[in-house]
Length: 551
Image 1 (cartoon, rainbow, N blue to C red):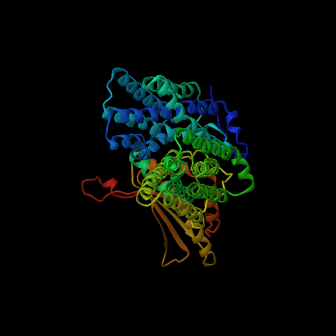
Image 2 (cartoon, rainbow, N blue to C red):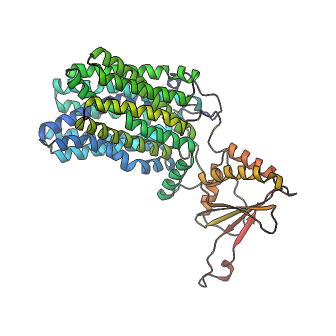
Image 3 (cartoon, rainbow, N blue to C red):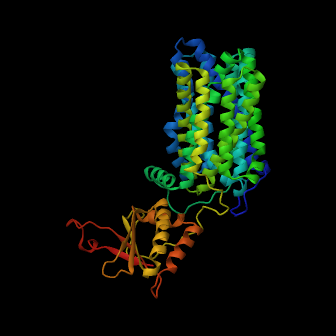
């Protein structure tokens, strides 16, 4: 069976549930909700088990750290793996690791082997499985559904998790109280099998590259460089990190709000989480309507204001109804913000690098969330809960204001993916895939009246080529012949040069045509390829000279 995403340039779909018409996405999405529910139950069970066998507050706190730490350690590596290997197989491997770790934890509990360090170790392994699966699943969305449905798919993923999160901990508590810890662990392990079955059953087509896989170091370097050079991805990542740091106070301080301001217990906490989840669902369903009537930037600012209003209300109210209503507003803002930022990264990333850009985005945003939990918890402990919530509200308003400096662009309807196959130029020297470094030179003849326009276009060209692999890009002007300009850049190997050209999009090639139109020569600009060779006497005489090819 297969689910295929077409490569068209249709407008972005405003239909919230359109991705669920795709059987592949629907099957994996539903299975993921089942496993997420089990994971949340398991988190409650592990925390409760640790609290019962250890008197150390630190060990209890380390449960959360052990589950989230793999995302920080492995994100960049898993992103490179996702872009170099079958994303479907990477997803399957991640779920297998989670299932194996959960099964071993269940067996240890059944046998009475409940050492605190064993528990932390298995929790860490489960977190490793999540760190492997999540980037692959996020990156696969653009392969499974139509490009126009990517925003709705990302929103559904966010809504699904936030909905499950409202009932998962409560259900975990009920299962533990009624049937015991062993049952909770066993049910979770069985729940992890659902995504494995869905991934095994469904297949989807992915454009394959004729070039060999990148090395891990090169893949990581290219991913970081592309992210750093993409203004859209940088803006979304910075805004996401700041939003996570500021907004996490809503969830991190919610138990203290229930205990200290509302004088409530577990039931009140469940009602509050239900309010947050209800708002999250409403925000997700309304996302398509928001996209029709306002820009992406305005949606993010509105979401920040909604979360700031939630924090302010929680800081000032002692009414359960008011607090639950405020959390509904905050939940809607939470989903609108995260889905919008995630979509911005997805649509700005070509398929060849999307796993890496998403991994970097999530690593930094998770870092912001972790830092925010510590910051607002410290403020609440050293000052007061009210000060912490009001500080979070102020920080969220500042995050909304950062849109002036780092605005989110509207989603482009054009594809950011490579335009098609690239035919390697003929060369007069036998080259191996790792032969290099390769030097590329292009000579232009530019009239004085066109120099400013030429420089503007070459700034764009430098960004385009550097983003897809060019290094040491320079532009020189001939002092004896001022009309002659020379563009030069390097790639480490011959394969890297071919890979650079495979990554160029139609928009990039249109930029090349605009540059070439300014060329005054009778013939088009000639691309000269050369390979650097050292002048060591140990080399054979015929290898001491540079070789070149024109095409």
